[in-house]
Image 1: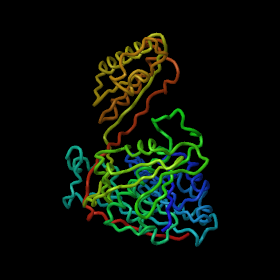
Image 2: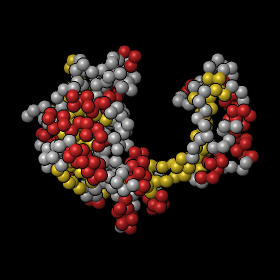
Image 3: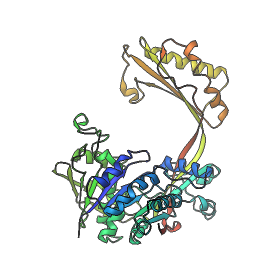
Image 4: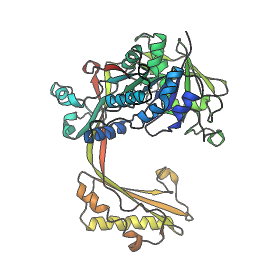
Length: 454
């Protein structure tokens, strides 16, 4: 069987828009995988859909497809993306409209994968005893039901495989796992069995390595970061997969960045819990079994991966309204920048107390001193050129947070001296969306697959 080449085009919603274009134009690939979703993204998209039923997906995806569709058709490249968010149908219809606009009728088929959105069924599930208990606290979701904004089960690769079997050119999903977007074309091309756990694990690891885009090809890399070449034009990663489950991580020739054992290893450790049990809907991968070998410039062979049977549950990502927050900043200049910032914080807290305002939390950070490393930063230098004082408040009620926002700017003239630079204006009151992780039996979730033609 042929080698299957899967290129990563997006690592998150907001990633470099030139990356998918360069993946298609820069050399041969069979599939373009684009990952858009994170837990907070789902709540943002759900809020958009609540305001406009036609929204709820990554809106920069259809224009990108309009730009790429002629080349996708010409080069026979298929796209798999979870850009559908909480409204994959609207995203699919937008892509179909772009195809018709380009005169590609009969040449583009869009697969829409759904069934992950549990919001329409949430009350029925709870009534039947599906408690959706918080994995961290054990509390039942009923405790916060009235504040829930979104609830999505993490689907795996198999619904995407079905869409590919129905000859979809572009597959658009809701909350499908990041790894499933890469695993699916490998299952489809190689005919892997649902219980071929080692190969399922191998495809899962391949997906994990490239799901964050250039993070495995030189971006955000600690090792030798000063000498990684050409990061103004980074090459996004490509997996060259073989039927036995082994694969090579590489990138297009002539692009910037670097693919090495070090860069791949850093990505493997990303969001890692127990390395012996990386759990997905499709199977469990043992990351301690992974073998990496540099095969040449920008080529890393990955092999030896072992897997175990999938669990009988799916993870559910729930977001719910928690309260309100606001964050304000002022920058203090040398001399005594840190001392001035600390004095400003003391003054602010005394004023809030005098006003009778109470908060669930007040958090102060001194950017340039200890905001990143905390106590590990050690004592600050007295010669600091500048310090950003950043203070945030959180409350279940909006009123005290609103009042807090009026207390930062006055400190410019009635507080410590030498405020300089960007103060940010009056802080804005923002809603807090909290995360509720849960499990649901697989039998309670039925994925849907529909393929439409332009």
